[in-house]
Length: 103
Image (cartoon, rainbow, N blue to C red):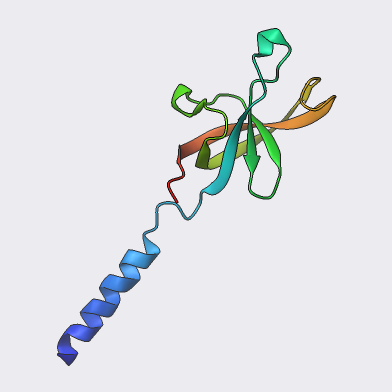
């Protein structure tokens, strides 16, 4: 029985260290309304309350209130939104990876 213990420990270590979601942050998709109709489009609200404006969000994730996990890259750009809330500036981000949060 003892000869299997190191193998079992190694297998457990590999299973724990191979979490594909470890670099993803949890967030909620917010639909502020159509840009053509004075809305600001889709905003990503992180768990810490930070709101970001994705440069592009895939159509499969364009649903108000959808909980997601994502990895994003900042590009140093900002965008002013007049309607949500009045005169708020959002950092524009590029989504590198996104998936539904099933937790």
